[in-house]
Image (spheres, rainbow, N blue to C red):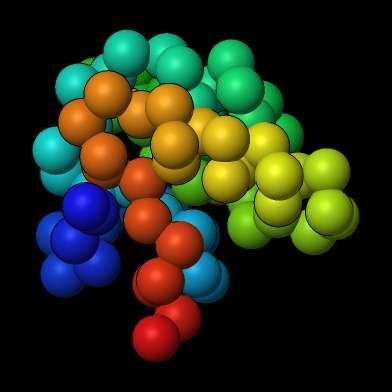
Length: 78
Ligand code: SF4
């Protein structure tokens, strides 16, 4: 389960985030390309835009379920 106390630095504020356990595998960027981007210099993904539509929310949920190391969280606002 993702840890909201260990978010990667580039996440935009909001409920969705990536934490530091990310292994830069590309699954989330493929699954939810509107919301996840790569920090190619540092080798991790981050949330660059919070989901704004039901479709983006669903893609983020799918990315969270597919992340091999459970680095994606959706409790960043709590
Ligand atoms: S799916 Fe998970 S491990 Fe892979 S790049 Fe995204 S956050 Fe990182």
